[in-house]
Length: 402
Image (cartoon, rainbow, N blue to C red; front, side, top):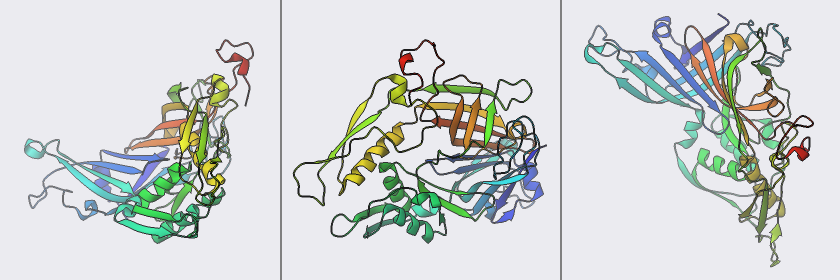
């Protein structure tokens, strides 16, 4: 078996008895939602007559829980670059062994299913990542002389989370007392998500190889790196997925008309933040506008104190709408050789001119048992490939236009 996982409860490894009983461990990672975990364990009667695990302190409210998935360095049929950066063959070479902390958080709820005689009874435990701790208190606070990235850094630091270097990749307006301070009304995580959405950022907390080392992201997706692994289904020997569902949606805006009066300017003429660019790197050659041959323009009215902030808000609209291509599929870790993670870049191979190429992993649902580790994934893309010369298409004249 080329894969295994470790379950940590209360910062200690789960005992062998529990691991043997554990019917299923499910973990879901996402770029724009908190990570979640679900454990299902059979119930029985203890020697004292109580239900096993129902009152186990390891399954109590806010008890720490984490999952580390591992590859043992074999079965890497489609690896181009290992999850930790080490090179491996794209046609069957072995990837290096690697640990991936796919969940690090706390238990939040418990559900019992009981049947007569306790036969077939189960306990299901559900938890959420560390961001839940940022939701425990609603706050009213004025932030002055700071950028949004600095606000995120201070909030992350309060919870022992290290801000990602990506959080400083873009220029940020400074909220000043003279012009426009920043008011918080709500929990820390709700506040960060509000700020992120309106400026085209994503908020999440993730760990890399071991629990407790947490990184806070308040940034746009990084689309400029290399793909980590090939997802291929057209190779009789080295296939890594056995089914994919792909679609695109042309009903999304491609341009924004953004106009606003500025807090810092008494000029009666409104500022212009019109844009047709999201500011993100394209994952292929044709944007939605080039693919359809038509622009869909929406209007944005918002309160800002600079043209730069207005343009940033307009780009945020396009970033959220720009993921017009989608792919869903399932991979087996033993076959793929890489633990898929939210935010990872992957290559689709052999799926046609439109869809072959680089995609970003948006969500992954890990299903772990003693026998196997499967990963149900959703990939997104903000562009499609160029059509072959002479291919029939309503927008064929635009083939190859970036």
